[in-house]
Amino acid sequence: MAGYAAEAPSPAEEEDDFELADANLTADANVPSEGFRKCQREGCSFAVTWHATHCCGRCAHSGLHGPHCEQRGKDAAAAAPARRRCSGKGCSYQATWHPNFCCHACPQGKGHGGKCEQQSFRAGSCASPGCKFQVTWHATHCCQVCLDRPGHHGPHCSRVDFSRFDLPGRSRLEDCKPSDQGGSFPDLQFAEAQVLGKRVPLCLDLWLPEGKGPFPCLIFVHGGAWRLGTHKTFLTCKWSELLKPLGFALASVQYRFLQEAPWPASAADVRCAVRSLRQHAEALRLRPQVFVCMGHSAGGQLAALLASREPFLDGDLAHVCTASASTVQGIISYAGALEGPQNATHGNVLAQTGPWPPVLALHGLADPLLQPRLAEEFVALLRPLGVDAKLVLMPGHGHAFHPRPDAMEAILDFLKRFRA
Image 1: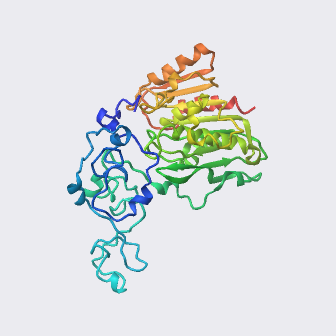
Image 2: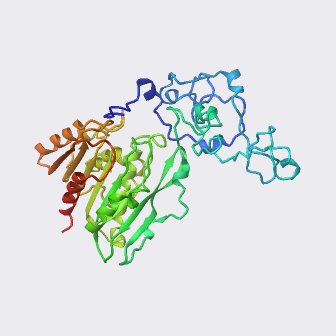
Image 3: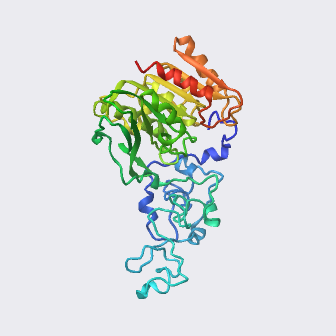
């Protein structure tokens, strides 16, 4: 990914970065092995070994074959491991003892024998015990490494985990009606989106101070190279405890990763969350005129892109809350991966033209992943445009999102201007 000094993928890895947005994994993964299923790319005769649709990511994208394509023919594909649900009445285990049953006892209605492997058959999930990732390699596993060494994952494992979208206690954002007592409101669904052919809810967590409001809102976007991380930790971490006395409402946003939906899905989700919060601001006791977005690493790039008016970045959620804007009144980039993922259209913040709100860019001088020049170039780009942009370089600080005293002082000073 662009801008990362230590984790930039090789050209070979980039060829497998393409993610097929409409791959219907849930349906295909439940079908018993047919011995041979041909790649869906027209003219390709290789077997399906990437997601449930193609022989490799490059073939899905261009019809060519990447270095990690297994290029299995019909005979080799027939030997691929099969995965079936046990035929025993009411049994949810995999058929690991017999082509149709999990163990000797199950078809006789005697429960499960002592040698039953009791491997759960969960629709679309990797067959390795304890793995929650989606089947994206053959029809059985998340990657070949997990097949050979359960619980371990190779560099080309897509690591798609639908369980992170499964929040049983979630409620709709528009149904949230806070009282004067404020407090935490987790798992508020602001949209529904596509992930590999499946509709999933997108949620945010909200915290409100005591009082009638309306309150200015600080929206946080977590990092993770656009491929991992969670929005669930911000409202309970030390950062939020330090920020809560300012009188801001705090929101932490969930977004789709690159292996789950192609760019610009990550940016579209964050922009949609801002529009949704603004559209329901009155009921949520928020001040729609005072939204500030803070992001770390990849989240810094997604936060900064809120200044862009490019319609492409609204992606497949452009139809949600169209009466409200996704702009914010302040942007904080903490170790921001500002050049964006590789080949991401309109993803390079340094190529955006704004219009820009006030900006605070912080970066550690000892960051092993992202060069401080990104923050320096960002601020140097903004100042000639008359933008109120401040740069804070932190000696000895790496990439981690820690509330150092110098970082905390700069962020608090930046936010205080929005309290009036």
